[in-house]
Length: 184
Image 1 (cartoon, rainbow, N blue to C red):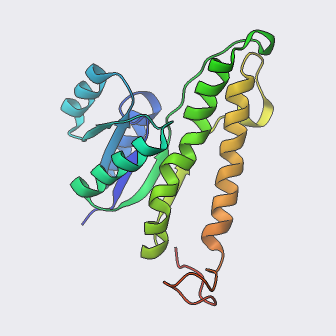
Image 2 (tube, one colour):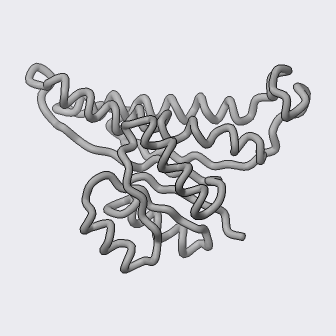
């Protein structure tokens, strides 16, 4: 049985290319999208990859969406956090809405998508979480304080999560002895 991969923002742009490449490599792919129903339907018709609509900036929507993917396709073993938006403005003109929309979609979505499936990955001792960032998360970009901050956060998130994946489980975790690190 093929491993199940979920790609956020997976029906257009970079996400569509990732979804197609994963399918070509033999994975069962679910492409998440947020709003463009016509583009998602065209992508599904072209590729045969199922599409699932939910807002990655909403934790409850992610829990429900991931549950539906797992019901339809099986446990999620690969997650590609690709969804991203821009709301560019010079900082002195940036609105709280522009800031929050970008932070919620580009950074908070990593928690919203990863946290609900992390336990299953740990229990199965296999999982891959890939987060698409940007050079702007390392160097910044004028007019993109929100985007640059989110993408820098993406980098920190991945580095911290990788350390947790390699760490031995705590004694309070009943599914594995404390002296045995996960083999994933």
